[in-house]
Image (cartoon, rainbow, N blue to C red; front, side, top):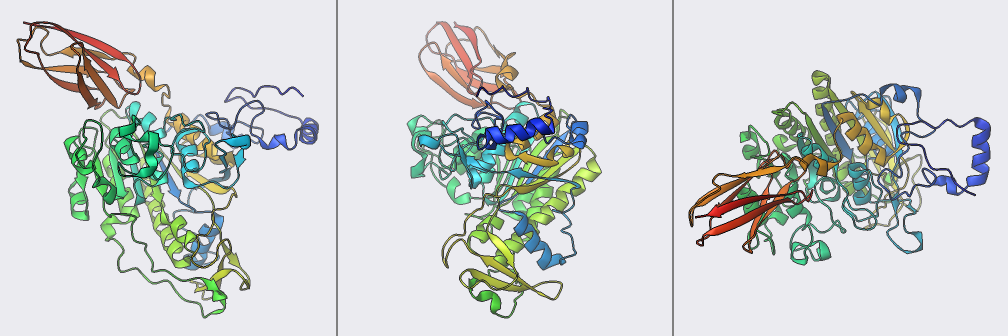
Length: 566
């Protein structure tokens, strides 16, 4: 049977009930694929936003625009995890004041794709945080373990890269190591999520020494978000093995490139501004943040024991470094765009997932409550600002379940809730000491502000990329943003050995520019700051013509500057 091509994005398909019934009988099981004739692995190939289920309210609001977007991700925060935290802290009839606050809600699908073999490009129904994060950050479905590359390993541009190229401020906040999958998907492109730093053996061809883009931490410095806050300081103590900063630690490199590097609350509180000239890199723990609550231990038959309550973890970071305060700090630093172009901020509550893996009910509840407070902070700003879209969602679901009676073979625990009754929680996908599994169910997505109605109904995770970029009205053709690039010299007729400056402007689609010389040497690679790059150059000691060529690393745009040495 010949399949018709899908409609252009933005045009709704109208199918009669009778025709839909016929299609259902003919196309199953192929109907499971989103959009006939379009590969799921293509950019936007899995989107549902303009499909048959588009609602009237969404069609009225989908073209709304916002100045700012705050995307909040509860890692592993499925409906069950939300309900457990709500029941424990606010009661069955209560509401989580942050997570439950956005008025428009929907569900989205989260599956990843198989990378190779006979199932290449087909759905892998239970995803990891790398594939799911890549989906919303790029609009492209990919395989588990991939960080913002497609199933063939090709880098896919991220919301952070797009927003920055369009002159917006950008931020990335997490309670995990900042190299972990969810924060990494906004700032890096690697085939293996464990490629944290130059010492990581899994980097392979992505390593700088192998001619690749470098590890996640090295690419983070290249992407140059205005504000980066989280854990993962241990990786930045590693030493670069190649590139312009070979032999230097990543911390030293960051300082040399103008970053404000802070590692404690006092240092962060002292930061008053953050921009491309002086971006903030705040790394407050060697690894992940400590949890809010001490762990509980789920055991076989554990829910038959007397119910316990969750206790605060004395090792928790100070309140200044809590997720809601980091969120507020990031917003205050980002909401200062000199060009009036707004900001994009991603915030992750990372350890809901990590404690769910450990079958640690109090651990996951505490992290959900921390995340809820971060959502409250974002919502308070959005309501005051009036021009901010807030999206609250998860990367994937997890396996904790509220059960009626103690399961005879699964791990379980009992907690005393604010209602005064017992909440029994079961973990049934791994034995004691094992890692509980993700699940493949759809997860909640909720939103507030301009464009929020685009989350209503059933969408796919990749739709979030288009909801955000369309609402921000950004130009996604980044090479075109460097089309008008030019360069000039402070002196076109320098004397031998004279120090001059080559200045490139309007390289807006680039994060770095490489400079080469006609006399054979590569001058170096330089950061682009607000579209401008400044290159110091010492004229050779031989008279004659020299051409310096500035080439945008991301756009490929080249511009030559000819000087004559006297």
